[in-house]
Image 1 (tube, rainbow, N blue to C red):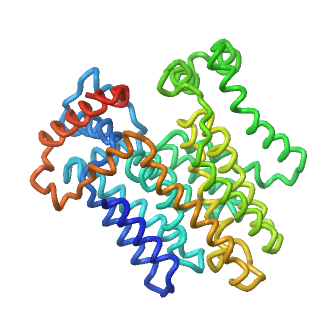
Image 2: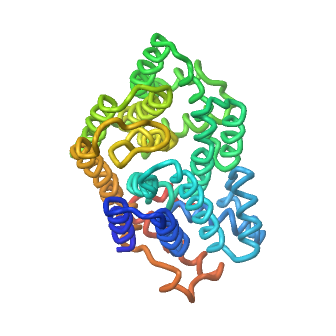
Image 3: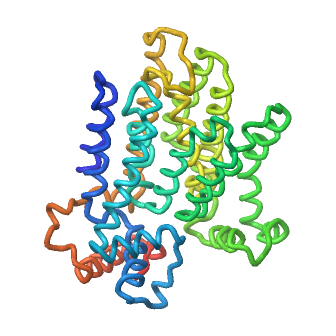
Amino acid sequence: MNYVLYQIAIILLTVLKQNKHSALIGLLLFTLYFGASYPAGYDWIGYFANYNCLTNNQCSDAEGISFEIGFNIITYIFGSIGGYQAIIFTTAIINGVSIFLFSKNFKNLTFPFFLLSGIVAWPLYTEAIRQSIALSIILLGMNSFFQNKKIRFTLFVLTASAFHISALTCLAFNVFHIKSKPLNTALLLLGLAFPVLIFSASNSPIIIDQILATNSTLFSKLAFYLASENYKPNIVIGLGIIPDISLVIALFFIYKKTSNSTSKTLAFKGAIFYIVVAMIIGRSMPVLTRFAWYGIPFLIISLAPAFKGSQYIKTNNSLKRYNLEKVLILVFVAGQIIRPFTIEHSRLGIIDQNTIFTRINYLSDKQLEYYAKSKCGILHDINLGYLCTY
């Protein structure tokens, strides 16, 4: 399977001896894998319907999709030039180049490729491609964030939100610069209390009526998720908690072994954000895990000392002392790579994944529309028809 082969290649590139061309090789592997992938997964069905409406004026009530202006511009320009596959390839280039530029801040040049691919290669870079561009823009804004250039970082966030509105979450990261233990404690407790609020709201929808404006986009989306049986809050704890624990332990040991600095404090605050949203809030309502993805840049920076370090956090110990942390990080990443196989529609998507080289005669709009409808048939067969546009 292409997904497994790609992950193995990125892991080997990261753990074996690095050279000055390692980041470029990572970029080529990333762009080739994602850019040359024939439409995979199921989110692309909605993206294709949007493309069909924007470029071919083939719209219907069933395809009444409204995406952010930034993504629609890319869809219209590159879709008009090279069809739907050009959108996939353009997205892969934007994401790959952004990670490549971000990687220049690290001594192990492929570590960002390794961690991002391991955690979100399937759910983000294959499925949620709008949000993948948003995250890439946030990556480019990380230096501004660590330099406390709030206006510049805010501009990056606003640009990212033009591709996925959830990027506005990153505006809250500016709070990390406030040096107040009571405030930090309050924010952590609020994050821990969030699952309780969600469960309460799912049983008594009047709660969100009191908190949010009933005509707001956030209200309508949250109300939909709470009312839907498919997205209803449900805590799930199983073997998947082992990689999560490995990550927490690795972060704890790295924190103890590295020198204190403002950058270190900021990075670990962001890593805690990822843990709270992905492992606590996300377990109560998995659809909210997508907000945790904006914490991955901080996670990369926090874990980097185990892989030679970065310009953000100074390492003051020999690399041998990070062997345990490396193993724990590899366990965490392996768990994330395996995770899509535990979700039925993701597993089916990975197994059915093809490249444009094997489907070169099936790239026309008419053939892609037929393929989208056949994918919808599969979703309906496994009671996931709500994911479908056709």
